[in-house]
Length: 94
Image 1 (cartoon, one colour):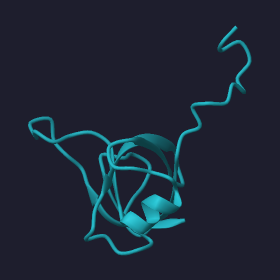
Image 2 (image 1 turned 180 degrees about the horizontal axis):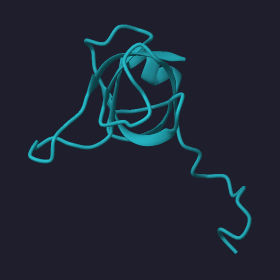
Image 3 (image 1 turned 180 degrees about the vertical axis):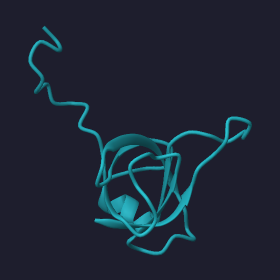
Image 4 (image 1 turned 90 degrees about the vertical axis):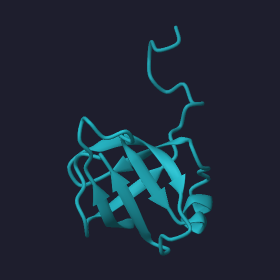
């Protein structure tokens, strides 16, 4: 579990928008995540895909979120690499 240390909500006019999660390099490595890939951010109310950004200024155990609904500062969330290789859903590849 990681603590949401910062949260940014953007506006329509902002040039940089969209779901993003900023992680310390050690936290990213432990989750097999690299800069620029997608990860599930699982908050207490919902989960959402967000782009991973490796951020050297983040402390271990803390993350920064941008435009991720369902999470707020101080809450604990999970950041998980999506499993795109297993074919567990029935009928998906039939």
